[in-house]
Image (cartoon, rainbow, N blue to C red):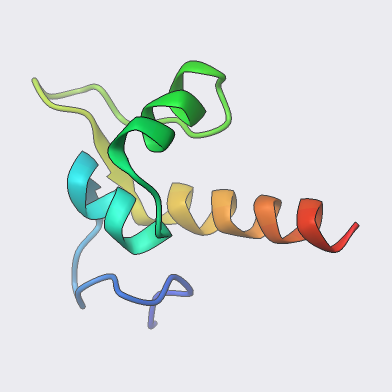
Length: 69
């Protein structure tokens, strides 16, 4: 099943910080602000936070609803 988030490489389940920011069209600083505010939740199971593709899809959908409302 293809990802609903354009720009995600095929077969990837999670992306590091810089790739997640690039896919969402955000700066690293803005991505970090969303994480601190609890609007975007990375997996912290490893040393570096990874952003699951499903979380990027959820975030993008939530932001689209906010903009369209």
